[in-house]
Length: 484
Ligand code: ADP
Ligand code: GLC
Image (cartoon, rainbow, N blue to C red; front, side, top):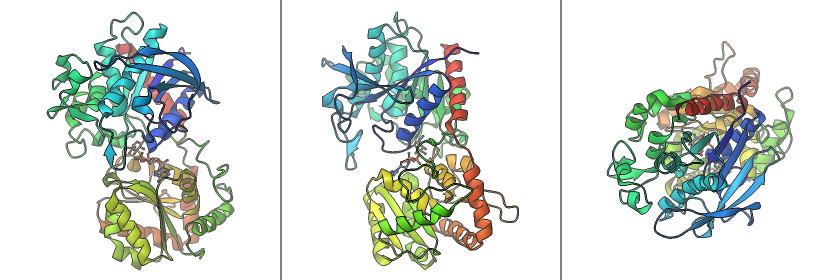
């Protein structure tokens, strides 16, 4: 029996404290699964404005050297009911803000300092306590400097000597790119500003730091791991990723079924199971009511919950509005993001207010109601590292219609009516014709009640629980440790 590990997570989101997307879900769930396997996890998160102060028990403070300004971080710990230690990093002038990255569509101007400070504070926390975790696990560009710091400043530190790290890419499109002067501004040695280190098209990229300096790199689905090594989908990180190809692995995200399970979900009108889908009709009626749509039960209802950004492809849907309105279907959308996409959906709802309803904003409870109340769930993503909502949909008996990209390929199997196999509908090209083609297939399949029930049952039987993925991460942690 291999010894249990102490894993230090560093991430900018974690459910239930802060979430803008799937990163928060993953960082909320993976530590729990690792603890269930017998490991110890200490997860670091900035103490943002919406997180009540003090967020936990005060553990002390340390000086965190980043730029020439003298700054300290305070640390506060809570141990969750699942046995995960969460350490909040407190520095009000950086983190006492309503959002983690920016407001409106503008990033905060000091993000390079904020997240350098965060990554370095994690190192200083352990150094100051004389404690060395077995492995660090840094997530996305916001924690990308952690592997860099471990190598640049702590490699021969008496506490943190040769500390290995694993870096996980949740989305290669967000890379934390800043000016080349950042190297000096955050006190890194100048030789780190070179192409085989952090230099990136004349600037620096924190994500590249994670990619180049972690012992192992992972991303959130096997298919996306292949895609991001290609120039078409690598957002210019494909070169560094190919260079690390032997150390790069795709591990599919899991679903936190404590949170997303229709048989226990407290947010839905009526709980239901795969054996008895009766409650789903009540959920549909409830959803229609809360979105202000008339309650004809038979007209299929397509649900969408998403960030409305280029990645997610919803401009393709609003662009196809005319054809969409000809379909015998209704649509509910919850999301927020780019102005044009929001406007597009507003206009669509104005054209067919009895069939299309949109809620622009963030609403955690409504996200659950949509998973439960819709018949189908639409994800026309241009790229999708993993995607969680299609996996939630499968468990809720809500049939996903997805573009064949990234984790959507790994999680949604095309329906074959003759064989009675498959869990959803997939299309290949990112254009209106393809979306409508897949929608039409789903609408036709919906008419065959018996076939549709098989399709729902197939999806509900799929098990994406975290345990398998947590074991895969454990394996990567041990590989990283063997290298350091
Ligand atoms: P991404 O991380 O790219 O946004 P994922 O599918 O991995 O995509 O995760 C999205 C998560 O965020 C899901 O838990 C989804 O329910 C949630 N979500 C997205 N938009 C909203 C919203 N407007 N309101 C509430 N939850 C949302
Ligand atoms: C990113 C990706 C999404 C993934 C999530 C969690 O936000 O866009 O596909 O599911 O991270 O890994």
